[in-house]
Length: 342
Image (cartoon, rainbow, N blue to C red):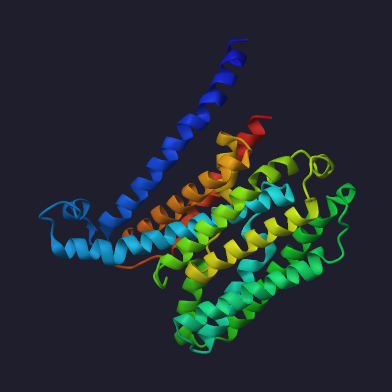
């Protein structure tokens, strides 16, 4: 009885404790990103903002490190937002932006542009085209023949999930062929981009604006998404247009994942472990979960990118590899914990 009496109190306090910790992680992430680089974490870098600080340190932090950290935060936030939306849409805690195949389509477009020797702007455009083509195929095949009544609500997510898995497999096969035929001079850059790399991110403003717009739209959908968790028929009876909400959610998740891929390449696990972890702490209320996922996902990528720049400096590792190294044990631990709590 004693342990049972403490459980409601722990669940009641958890969200209050989680939000300050999430905000603190974001601040520490940006602090580390500004202070640490290929030369280590010099004390002067921590005080770049103070009066009398080294002008070179201030220029380095403001001109290079913090813009890169802002781009990484936007990319992580977009991936976590996409993952959270997909997990609600498909009612599957293992859903991830890669499930839709949008990330794979964007990656294929970018790699083909690199193979042709295109510049950074054309590579980004090619990634957008690949993501758009994948999204069109997803809706044409995955949702085209799905029943739209609330009584058949489980069919559309299943079709979308299976179509996304097939698209991701197809894009992966094509990527393998492209890498096999690519010239050696461009192969290293392609591999780094596929693993995920922020070194080539062209600014932070565009992904930041995309993140702000995506979160704003997601928050408008959040109350209806909460009703969807009760079941399609119950949500329909409460006034939710289930088919339209499902379409809008899937499109928003696809666009968020596609924009992240065009900015930093293929970074996995963010959209998987961040929403799943926070749901264990904050619950499944999308009005609080979605903004928390954005902040936590952005912080995760910022910290991972800082490690990628400093662990074996002056060599820079791909941030996607660091995220995967962290994500695999964390996700396995979450699976073990969730099984123990049953």
